[in-house]
Structure formats: C-alpha cells, structure tokens
Image (tube, rainbow over all chains, first blue to last red):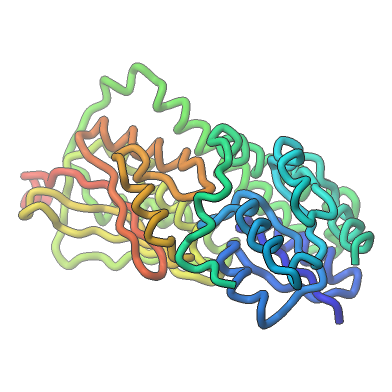
Length: 119
Length: 237
C-alpha cells in the first residue's frame, strides 16, 4: 500500500487530511514536526509528503532544503499546505514541490486530489 | 540524514509578520475547512459531525481568547488593575477546568498535583488566570499527541517568590535555537516558527503584576512559568 507522510502540528487538520488519504486507499505516516519526520523517513519512506511550513523546531523550508540535498529523497513528490502558502509560493520554486495549497482556501478533497495527481 | 544538532535552523528564516499572520489565519482556515466538511457530507457519521462541530467551537473559543487578550494588552485601563493575595491552588484548578474540554478533544491530559501547604501570590486574579491559560494553550500546541501537560508551582528566590507554570512534553529544541530564544527577555516567550503571540501577551500581563515570564528547556519539552512575589497573607488562607 502506498503511503503519504503528513507533517503538520495542527492535529485537527491532520485528522481531516488523514481521512482524505485513507479514502484514496493510501496509508498515513504522521509527524508533528520536521524533526519528527526526519526521525521516521529513513525507516518508513513515503510515496508522497504533505507538509506545513510553520512547524515547531525547524520550519518547513529548512526541511525542504534537507530533502532537496539528498538524491534519493528529492524524488519524493512534496505538497506544501500552509496558511501562508500564497505568500511563500515564490520561495519554493527551487525545491521539489509538486503543488502549494493555501489553507485559507482549502476545501475537503483538495489534498486527496493533489496526492493523486503526483503519485 | 544528519539533521539533529540544528544545522538547518538558521538556514531558512521566515518573516516574523508572516508567522503572526499564520497564527491568526490557521484557526480561521480550520473553522472554514471543518464547516465545509460538515456541509458537503465529508463528515458522514453523526459522531464525526459532532466532533467537527466541537472542534469548530473550541477553535473559535481559543482564537477569541487570544484576540481578547491581545486587545486587553493595549487597554490603558490595565494600569488601574488591583492586586491581591491569590490562592495558587485555586487558580490552577480554575485554569485546568477552563482548558480541559480543549485538551480532551485533542487527546491530551492536563494534570495538577495540589501542594499540601496553601500558597498565595500577589497578583491580579484575572490577569494571572489569563497568563496560565496562555501557557496551557502553548503547551497544548507543542506537546506530543497523547502527551501529558502539567500545571506546577515551585517556591523560588529564597522563599520570596513562586513560579507558577506549565510543563509540556514535546519535541526537544536544538541548543543553538534555545540560546537564540533566550538571548533577550522578550524573546524568551518564543519558539521557532511561532510568533509567540500568546506568550508575549503572558509576558505583558506578568510585567503589569511586577512579575516576569521565564522558560526552562527540558530534553523532552519545555516549561514556561511566571514568577510572582509570595503573599505575606499566606497564613490567613
């Protein structure tokens, strides 16, 4: 079964996104921080990463930097979902980001559709 | 991947205004998403609908609390508030009851072990309650899922003051991040990628009671506290 890593410190958003992921028959791997994601990613490599930008500890842009610096990881499609998605979109061009979704305009189904497009 | 040790922390700074915008937009975006999920039928069974409605309510409550406190920090009348002997056990219990529904809905526990001896500090009850609630909100955000959060009180400064605060169990912060945070008094209330809005409010309220906000870094989380003078009326309680 293919898997999606959800990185977001807002647990209630995660619950909703996880429901969407499960509905398209994929498994969720959850991390509430970039550090937590790094801990997991070597042992449980996802087929897609959905990440917020403003995270506790290390922000999502720094996380994208790290992913981009590893050949094997840089091939994993990444979807950025953030309440500052529109403001930060231009800064993400140099990273392996498949799509950027602004949380302030997100609708149920947007996450699952974005995942299906890139996996 | 060699990330530990925090080498990435300073490599990608984000404008602090964007971070504040995030803190105010995020709850509204969640309310919007949950409302759409209910109306579109994405939350199909009664139980998940009830849960989504409760999450909307609690998110709105928390955001209103934040914005009310924000406006209160700008209120000139704050200069006129009064202080009194405040029973620490009573206020911590009141805070626990106030945040309990939000904690339960987030699968978190909040505990408070009452001291055998009564303890009172010189404070304004309303402001002190708001300070501790802000700490509790912050702890909820940073504690691990299914994690525990503890309300605590400690005597400090040669028995002249009490530290009243909240201890969370969440992701450890790299050393260089923590040092950056604690470099000046105002930034002690911040964590990376957080505007620290709530904690800055707590800092403002604490100063108005002649108190100060402080933080302790633990290997598995952090404690945020307000230090206030002990009341001499202790024996009367």
